[in-house]
Length: 228
Ligand SMILES: [Zn+2]
Image (cartoon, protein in one colour):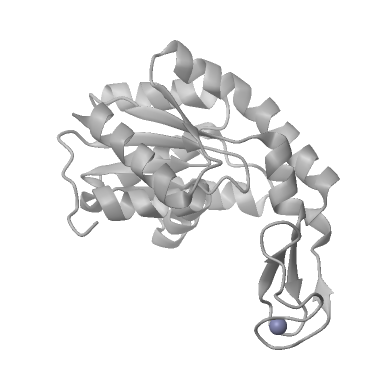
């Protein structure tokens, strides 16, 4: 997709999805396709602290005291960031809001600017398929080439296709039980947020188990529709 699609209104998208659902990849594609800017809470905080804005200094003081940055400060930083010219086409929020309380506070902020959340897009996964996908991963200990028990075995069993190495390793946090726990925590944390946006008619659910290119097309169609 060479041309950047123009949006008629600045879009405020919220991307929801568990670890492994391809959220980062899809956010980058939305940036490419629509000229949107992905704003993650961590990056926002770091940039505001580095820039020494009022809110950035408040955040710095809180973090240095070893405390969590309050919603108020995050919102103030977000508001500053949304006033900058590079986000004129719209933003994709990643990592905020995390609770329905934060979602309501975000709505308040947007309402004061005459804006609203364009869409909350939930990348939906099949938990057990995800467990299989993530927990089957392993890599060559020598060159780092990635393999998978089910989807990508070396051509010759036990020998790396790329470097001929015969030692492989698995990440401890990729085991099935860990992945299952992570998904469970995600669903528990995100359910109120999904309900919040569903009640406001802006929730879009996407099947995130398919091919990356298909998900990209579906996502692009949604963004075009909700921005029209
Ligand atoms: Zn190798």
